[in-house]
Image 1 (spheres, helix red, strand yellow):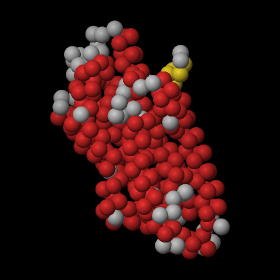
Image 2 (cartoon, rainbow, N blue to C red):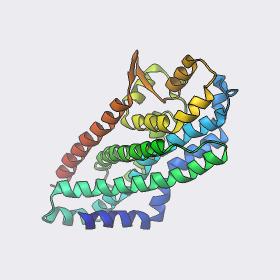
Image 3 (spheres, rainbow, N blue to C red):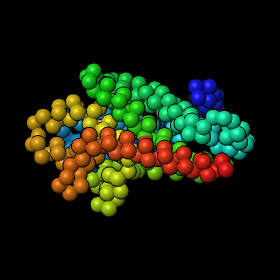
Image 4 (spheres, helix red, strand yellow):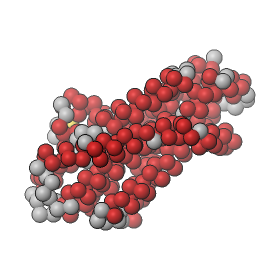
Length: 285
C-alpha cells in the first residue's frame, strides 16, 4: 500500500493544472471577501467593536482552512478518474491486493495531500493576521487546529471519495469539483453568516459534517480574539455573535458541543469510507 500511496501523491503534485484547480475555491473565497463580502459585517452593527477587523480575518481564515481540507482532497482524487479512464484500475483489481486496501490507498493519499495543502495554506493566513495586529495562537490552540485539520481531512476525503466513485470521465470530475468547491463554501457559512439565512437552510448547514469542522476551527482560532473584542460587551452579545457566525451550533435550545462535532466528523468518515468501498467494489466487477 505504501508504494500505491506514494504513487498517488506524486501524481497529484506533478499535475500542475489539477493542483491549481484544487486551490481555486480558496482563491475565490479570498477574492469575494476582498471585493464584495468584506463589508457585510458592517450591516450587523459590530464594526465599532475593538479589533473587529482582526476577528473577521480570523473567522475567514478558519473558514478557508475548512474549505481547503475538502477542495484539495477533491483534487487529489483526480487520480481515481484518470486510472478509470485509462483502465489502469483493472490491473489493480486483478492483482492479489484487497479492494479495501486499494480504496484505503486512494483515501490515504488524498488525506495526506489534504493535510499538507491545508497546513501550507494556514501559514500565509497566520502571517497575514499577525501583520494586521492579531496575536499568535497559544500552543494549545495550535495543537487544536492541527488536530481539527487532521480530523476534517479524514472526514472530507471519505465523503469526496464516495462522490468521485460515481464519476467516469474527466469532464464529469471537473464539473463535480466546481460544484463541490462552490457548494461547500455556502454550506459552511463562509460566503454569508449562517444566522442571516432561513432556518431551513441553517438546519441543512448544521447537518453537513464539514460545517462542524469549520465551527471547531473557528472556536480554536477565534477564541482569544473574541475574548478581547467582546471584553466590555454583555455576554449575550458574544453568544449571539457566535451563533450567527457559525462559531457554535444550536438546535433549538440544544447547543452542539465540540465533542459532538468531533463525533460527527468521525462517524461521517467511517460511514462514507464504507459506502465508497461498497461502490468501488460494484464498479470493479
